[in-house]
Length: 168
Image (cartoon, rainbow, N blue to C red; front, top):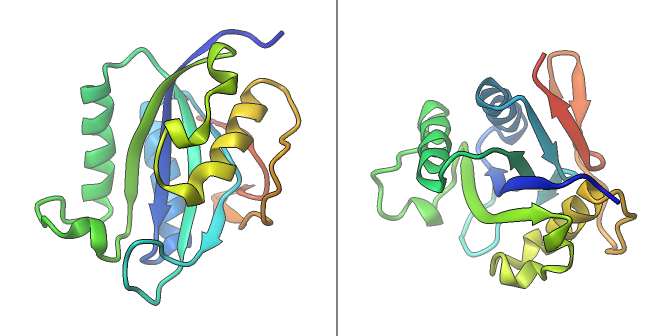
């Protein structure tokens, strides 16, 4: 059986210079956390907004004992550092360089059977949530999912399948 892991699922997204900003989001998260377990990265059209710019989206699991408000502060600071205007009340419906959303606090393997639709209503994340849950529990992912996009950070390439990225 898999080891017990507790932490937060995050939704990650970018549709302004998405490959560069996604790499920067990952780098900035690794400055705050020793490791990030991440689903594959999908290159998909925008959902719920009118834009011609495709998004890179992924779901990450951060093992931490931080309080949710402290993690939210870190996520907001990363968004701001990459150029998102957090004071714009309509920012949810605009193109963005960085979007980091806390989806849920989870304990694995206890929450392995938790349905993706109980975590978020953003249906485009469901296959990524299923993939990261399977990955964290050393199980094969049963959900059909499109090919992942390749993201490069320095000498590291990721995004085509679920993986864990460690701080150097």
